[in-house]
Image 1 (tube, rainbow, N blue to C red):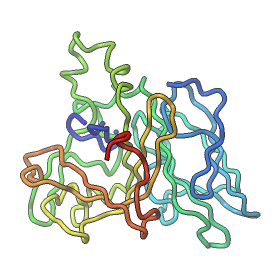
Image 2 (image 1 turned 60 degrees about the vertical axis):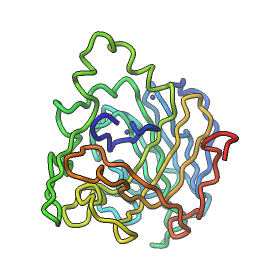
Image 3 (image 1 turned 135 degrees about the vertical axis):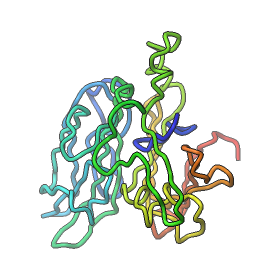
Image 4 (image 1 turned 45 degrees about the vertical axis):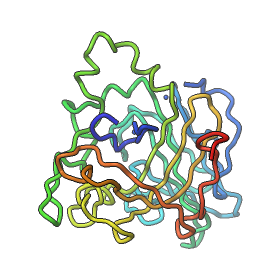
Length: 269
């Protein structure tokens, strides 16, 4: 993260490749994604399926929860979704295409909502603080309920992008450490009355919002996807003078898994 990278938040937070030829199917939460989350170069067609007869796949491309979102699209299982970072229909401008999906039948939710992020490193430099916002609903600044005015910047810093010392090195450098993609409804961050990013002084569980967290490993190993709660953390870093608020994640059974079971720090505790 350089200023604010809501589109993905890096392992020292940033918000990519392998050839998109033969991917084994990945099963998550009773949904089958034909291609795993990760780093990509070429566009492709993603299929999402569920084994229940007559199941319908609901999905979004704008990060919103497909089980409740007005922007959700529906297709009979298996659903075919075009993964193309140049296509901004029904999604925001970003180098990552985020799919959130679930399966339903007769109005009943069959699966948990799963997010999968497909990153295209060649497009990371297109979003900078001097450029356009990712889309409608992404504010320049917001005044929260305590009259705290939060300034917001997006993308990579143009000073870094245009520095000849770094040109040609940024894309490869983003592959040196894992990427964490954090996906949540836009209102959970920026709504003047309830968004945690624009009301960062608030604490406790009432200021926790549902989110998806994915670990995307540059070496192609699976990483993880888990649903959790997200809050703002820190002391002075909560003030509006700081454009980069830190996040804290909570793993509770109300979101899905009660714990994150993954050797995030290797063999150490």
